[in-house]
Length: 138
Image (cartoon, rainbow, N blue to C red; front, side, top):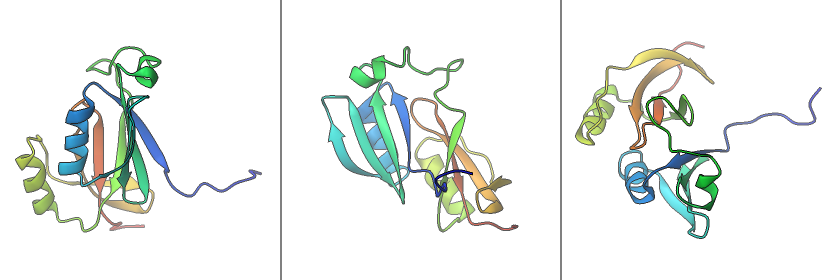
């Protein structure tokens, strides 16, 4: 028995090599909003719907604690998934392609709400992001 119930992802924290470049990506490509800055820590808090994405400068006070920046053989995470609405595959593919993303057609994948279509993309530091639509199957 647990003294709590998990509700949703509150936030993810990503170590990034260029805060300005990553902020631009998360704002312009994914529509996140900068909610709070902690320049003393090299930390940005971004809204992502009901959740948050925190960006930490790998060269800043918090980022240095995690060692070297992520790369092809050293990832921060495998991926994280953001639920998006509406899920218009062609519009998403066009938007991501215009942002310089190499994207493939949506695939049916399992998530918190069941099976639904999703598309993968990458942020400037190579962190993989899954953009997931509504469930098509429970």
